[in-house]
Length: 286
Length: 286
Image 1 (spheres, each protein chain N blue to C red):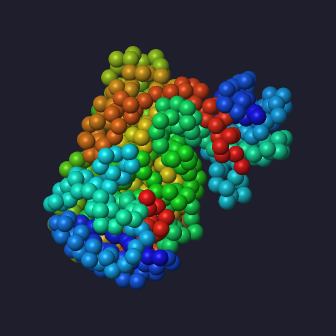
Image 2: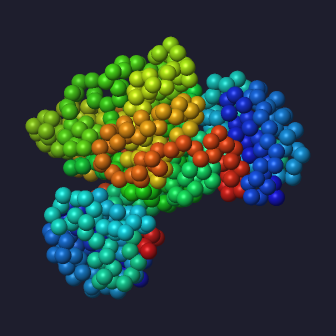
Image 3: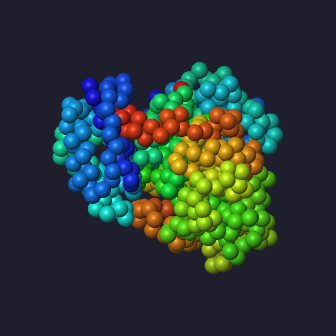
């Protein structure tokens, strides 16, 4: 029995084949070019295996609403060729097997829920903080969605008293993504986050924004674990700063697990997404 | 087959007995006094029936974490006698039958999900706006909780440009509840909301706060229906104002159902909570 997993990112696709125990047998990284070309590379890889099912965690926005005529499509992306692209249809056209379809962050959340930082919990939230900010939640083994998938990066936050940055989100200006993702850091400071001193005061401001978001997620979902991944979170000094700001903003209103175990890095590191995709192939393919 | 339902409020308890089709056979309203006295009245009512199970939707905060030693307790309420009160234990001590236990707003959300404004949907969120603000969500028939139950009223919102009110929440000042619940309206305007002209400009400001919250809930949960109940929402002029503000704040970033069917009043009116409690007795009692 073989599972196929696709972590479909805007820059590259990671594809993997695993055995029934999710041990990865082979993996490949494919640059994201035009859909037909990218898919051709995927087919060349998967054609070597008799797959039982495939799980896809895709960049978005995507249509995950099973009632919708465009279920399985990448929808309104500016990425050339991928706008209104029937991704699941293309995969199903080649392989007549069940396919699980969700966002990249939902797949990562599912991976962390089963095999990572939340493996002993009943619920978790995974947030990626990088070029953009996105999140996914799993509650009792189910990925949370509804009319569509979450867009957790676009919640509204308050500006830090020392920061009047107006934000870069074309839709909301200073929403969380607009004020705290990688491009916002660079626009504000004229330096990439990765080149900023780890002791720079800005990290406390960044931590304040992320903490506000984590407080809101906590109030709404009460997850057992909050997992923070993505490029910006490679700045490990952020974790203790976020915990400090979270404590201040929450002001002991609701109980949470100890913050050192509540606000954590992905247990699977950069493999959360591909692992989640393989697990989704096994558990959620239709 | 009989189900018992308890909608446990800070001012009064509504208890009901229904048949297997959730038709209410008898109901009673009991003032909330000391726990022992209140429970005595509940017992007198339920003792007349051979109940199969009981569902409770309670004022909070309460402990809904089944791993916890104080599962079934009302926890840190300032309400005299109810602090750390083992509510489920008291019910189970009298009736050796399964009991479902959740918050009043979760019960209302569940009632609306099965029999009210969300009965044709796979997910919904119910928000009560009254003396306090609280919310509950149901996704695919499951009530969303985790380490504890949500406290959706305490998410952070931004002050309206025309409103510098500092809020009345003892924990967070101008969180949503602190800035938009009934006591905040009265403190700010020196008049109760119910006595304010329906055409007063303040209602647009109130709508802005509620719309911000609904945008955040939408980004995080993508529910198919947002249901707004509670005393403040008796001001029906708020609904179109909230829809207008929601459209502005969301700025067409994610798709939602048509706002006239997305942001709505409870289909069950004031019976959402007790109906939900009876449904929970049937479906979720343990």
